[in-house]
Amino acid sequence: MTGQAIRVGPLAAGTAQLRSWTAGLLALALAAYPQLALLHDPLTDQNRYGPFGDGVTPAGAEWTAWGDLLALPLPAAVCAGFTALVAGRLHRAPFRESPVQHLLAALTVPLAAHALHLAWLWADLTSEAILLTSLGVGLGCVAGILLDLALD
Image (tube, rainbow, N blue to C red):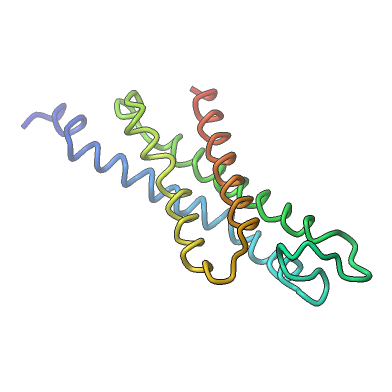
């Protein structure tokens, strides 16, 4: 086995994927921590804003319940976009040249994290929250991939 075969063989492709996924997990942790630390309490304080998706603005609330819902996809889009960008940038050549391998490397972590998050909170989510966070994650992934391609 030559050195060239090690750099481009199936083992090398798997290693490149694993490297991208590891970087994506670290990027997700870095992007999600401030979101959880800063936004969790204001967005989930039902005495202040009302429960997500009820469409009712409690007396004295500074924004509507739809404002609560619109605050969900923005952090999700930022986290997903940053994660896809980092994972995509660290997916090395020659494996970047394959669209399937590159999309798998860049999108596995944000989409798997979103699916895990939905599964974990499924009983507490409304259809609007699921739709809007999924839309945010999807748009963030598209933005991350497009930025990754633009940087090439």
